[in-house]
Image 1 (cartoon, one colour):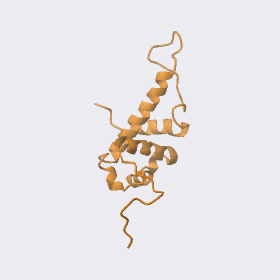
Image 2 (spheres, rainbow, N blue to C red):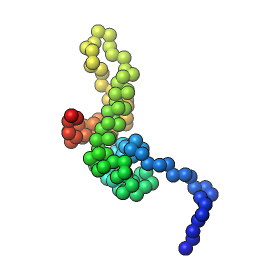
Image 3 (cartoon, rainbow, N blue to C red):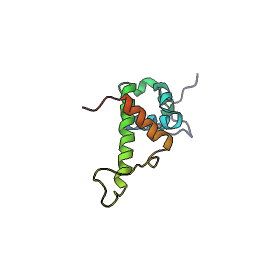
Image 4 (cartoon, helix red, strand yellow):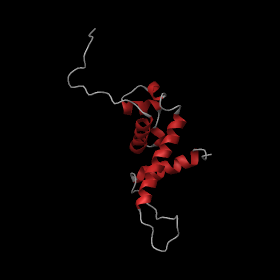
Length: 122
């Protein structure tokens, strides 16, 4: 059995987990493989962590799905806010940004899936 007392040469320091990092990784997994492939175990693999360590940052998978909805909605809102509304157009209505904020496969698919499966905010 080999015991090390110092960090081995060439190893990078581990980036601590945070709720934001967990949710960003969850969005990446959903983008890469589809929302159906998102499991706590798969998410932990993406982060180089153990699945149980995720529960310090997110209570359960439903918390991850709600968090993904928040992250994606925030990204969409950021893009929409940068779009100039057409002169004389209705206030509050902006053109569709279809695919400009995220890969086309994920943005609409994730938004549609989450909108139909998430409870309405209070």
